[in-house]
Length: 124
Image (tube, rainbow, N blue to C red; front, side):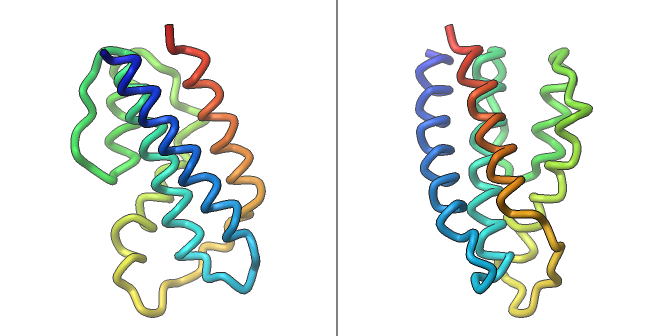
């Protein structure tokens, strides 16, 4: 059951990543791109929790999801920068003039893709 839910979440994460890649154009506001990227990362982390037998909470807070992974024994030190994306899920969705974070969209999409593949490889 956990692997089927994890697989489902990873399929949706790939869809969100596809949208984020469509928003790489610098004329698209970073907040719009960041929301799609955040959704991808959130679903990927939740899939990972499912694989570990942990039911993820209903949250957009990537720091909270990373803490749960850490508590389950996953080394999340390289993933800590993902916490910045929580801003896109909450604050920037309703801010009419969000401050640009200046993230390298292409690099972050590639990192998200690598994370999806890492998590996918753990499904039995």
